Image (tube, rainbow, N blue to C red; front, side, top):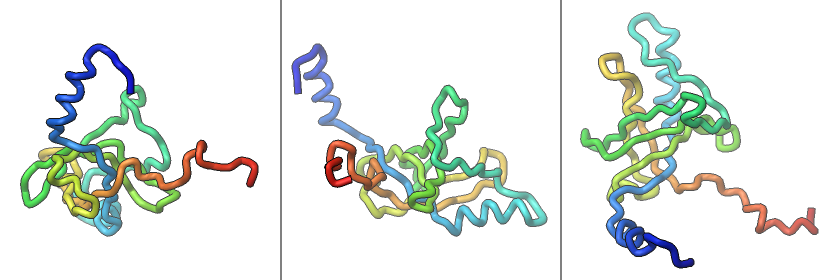
Length: 144
């Protein structure tokens, strides 16, 4: 909404956008099967920690990304997985091709390191940002 050096270049880049940031809601049953493998005989899936309501950054050295596929084709990356107590769900950020970023679209996250037992975890594309609480600026403090 103001002039700055590079504004026109950014407009051109945005007009040719190829990817979109979305929220991914991980499938509960698929997550449970990862945990179940830890208590079963045989090779287990990679351990999935339970990060609850944390923001993971490069400074915390916890940044991790997983490949997202659809019909066997790579369509993006998932990162920043957390468990949200508010929504009772495991969610992450997804960076998807525009054509695959439609809300409600089901995608697959490949969980586990290469050359180990990997698990396909289904996930549903949801809005970003995911939080649906009112913004502070929209709350009438006189009513509190």
